[in-house]
Image (tube, rainbow over all chains, first blue to last red):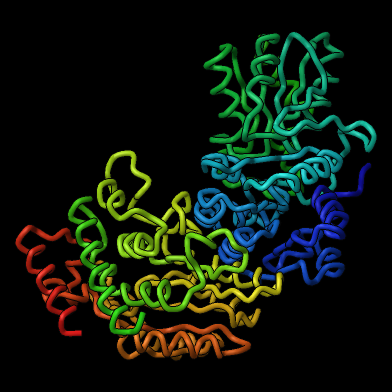
Length: 310
Length: 276
């Protein structure tokens, strides 16, 4: 079992790059520990800015820094970053087109028992609705690192959501195919297309293995790039399959499921089932307990595929 | 230009502003009039900024936090050579225009988009912080409305400005005492503004007449000499400044003058200008 959470993978890339790139600035809102960015703050205090518990200020100040040539990484729990600072993300980052990378940490229901205030089940919908904002939910630590390396090379706004806990690897250090804004095809099959993002990619892949035992062949797409959505990959996977199932750690509206349904409905109509969190405060528990309760695991995804195929 | 010439210029730009509002059939005229001398002093007396150096990393930076006063801002930017006033007047507020009712940075000379209140000061904290990090000598300015100070984000930024000792940052409060619903003290009072900013660790300068170029100049010079803390100018201005038709009247927050009012306003501007 992997012990390195995706948030630490982000810090590792920033630590490495900041050694030579003095324009990198990391900002936190009393969240350096939660974001695994304490090592960065210690190593490069002159490239680290503490904003205190003030998420609106965190985002606007990042935009001001970026306007003056800095590569700003604003890290805060996804729940606060995506909704409390929403207008700052919309106006100062996306609309003003500043080079700010918004790092939403402990996304989805990572904070489990802390309750709805700390869950971010709206961030994909909220951030995707902003013009000029890109939205990424990497699936494992290797892909997270590749994504951050790629984002360091451009000057456009982006929102990245990662979870709190380590997730099992999908890829390996030597084998992590990554193309910016292109989904990664993990398996190919002609019965079903399973399209997942973030922490749901691993159970999607396991669901495909379960289905294989029953003679059902599924394509699994790691749709880490929720916006811009890789429509081409969706159409290809859906066209080759009888049904489509999406899986995401998000509210049932406005997230990956809604977006995939739009594409499939317009381009290659098929039955689409969305696996997501409920439209209700989420039951408390560890991530795994919550996922199991709502069928957001390999068995649940496999069952959804079978139901859709009936 | 000396102070008298700049004061006269402010009246000429008031005329451009009112023409723009009449042509575009909309605009925030009251706040345009109150903030005019502040903008004129910044752009023609204080800031190192021009169309020639607009991409220079050493230029001074300005963010119009009270973005609804965009008409006055357009008039000043045009006079400074960033925009063409004829084109602005023709296109302001029209279908498909880039001259919309709030600042947007697709236009030359505009650093950041605004319109939603309480964004300018925190963005300027970031710009001033970058100046410190990059060891630049530029200064950063923003103008906020007094009604705008009810936004909590202003005070988040006030804390950060003090925390990081941003003496390259100067905020101006256009203290015209009126907002859309009426007197600021009735809506959400802050008559102790001086003490509030002071308690946040800022150097506070009360500008008795915020429509006086001379007084504004003196305040900006004092701000430049202030070390180790940011400065805020509380510029006591008159909303609708320039004509008795609209002065100190909340209803003129975004009123478009009738033909009759327009003629009287233009006459009043000319008279005030002559009296300078």
